[in-house]
Image 1 (cartoon, rainbow, N blue to C red):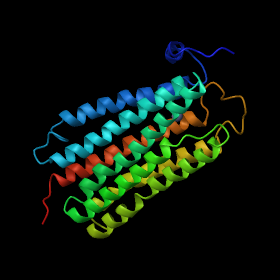
Image 2: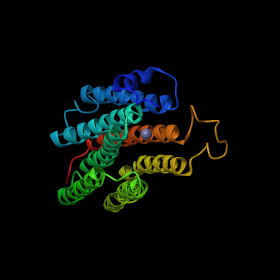
Image 3: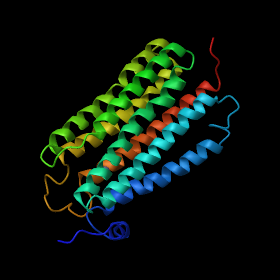
Length: 256
Ligand SMILES: [Zn+2]
């Protein structure tokens, strides 16, 4: 079969095939992220709030840019992966770069707001997640042969799961330093919801649900990868709602 041109791949965004759901789920998420980013940047309740600091601005923008990069990179991967093996490798790495960036950047607003009054703990966790980011970049940059791809994919999967799970450490620290019945700790429910969504998405993705029970039925639409995309988009949005709540709480209080 002849290799499709890049233009043909780009045009396929508007055609119905087995990647249409994967492409559009993250392309629409990208537009959604841009819209929410714009709203947050211009709202007097969010980044235009007089008590919102430059550090908080940077952390929010980093999170939004990371979400936009992640959704756009994923769209590019699902659009161009069928072009050639070389292109597949490049867009796959781009997709992974987007995931790595979103995981790490998601920590930033949480850490900046959560440890606003504990600068040492904040600096420690931010430095730690930057190390995690650098390790992730190293893993993303590795190129496997066709045969070694499966092992490399497994290692990357383990790394990303570990990087997300690491979020439990600052969350515990946050809970202990604020008291288990404080208003702030109730907001950890958003973190739990984000973990749950990522966890469910990962389970669906890894167990290949629902196509493993009805092979062939979801070949064109509704296979596990599509649901994984939706879970990732929802997890990012739920996390945004959580940091938004924490931001408005922080705007009402001052450090002692
Ligand atoms: Zn995907």
